[in-house]
Length: 129
Image (cartoon, rainbow, N blue to C red):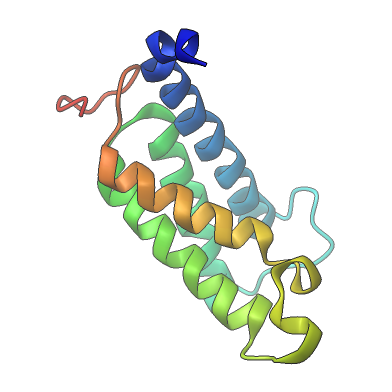
């Protein structure tokens, strides 16, 4: 697999962009009701979560204030998992595959990684590190 290492910077950038775009779509669902089966109450916890998803997702796509946006997104997904998916339930609901929290856990860890690495190439951030 060493042949891929020369593309690692580009692959990382694509990962950051795609993850940010997917995350922002979740925010669009909550804020604008696109492809959603429920309305989000204005200024509710879900609405604030949706705003974080929308804004931080777009910031990740363009690579601006990437570390801050990724760190905030990571924390938001950790809260989403603990509060809404796991909800301190034990038994079968403890497992992410059962409580549908897989994406929240993966987003949380992915965004924590992006926060630690930075924007990388194809970004507005000047540090590119």
